[in-house]
Length: 278
Image (cartoon, rainbow, N blue to C red; front, side, top):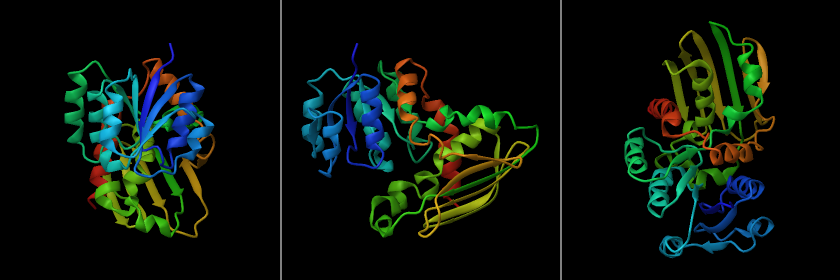
């Protein structure tokens, strides 16, 4: 049976990946919400989709619809609230990273989930990358890992919500949480911060995951050549391979009941919250 979706944050950078995933898995997008009206890309996927710029009108519409999933692509600080909203209008949740900016917010989300028939699913697409099996093949009892992730952003970044730490959670939450999640997934949740330094457009440091030593540099500084590379015991893995093509697979897993839930994302939220405090 075709699933019905609504989406919050439909004018954002990542929303088209969700439009495509919904389309490719046979779903129907009923409505989106975003204060920005730059949503013309919808015509390529769901030309009959309703658009709302006001939350109240969006809710009024949703409560009269049969909705299976509410997709959350809004600014980071709104994710937990919008997950709560989606479950209260009768839908399960598909949420972009990060699910929340503080670990204690997971308690509230888990409470709502436990007291409804709905689930919160997280997009952790790197766990589904074809690279994972190749990475695991070179992992030993003790490992040396180097992570370099450059995703340069223009001047617009300094004037957007993403530069506001209270809204984005800083660089470590903005672009780093999926890398941190991958490290925890590959090397275990027993972590230790050896050294860490944050700035507005960059974070760098050294971490330990059990017997695995990790150096990591994340940067959105202008002028850098984009790069997304994990080096494990001297072998490079380019995360750019299929990087933007894993959302459809994520949706397939979720529809089969095999997605990633609240407890799957907890270690990454906890570690990123710790790193943001340095």
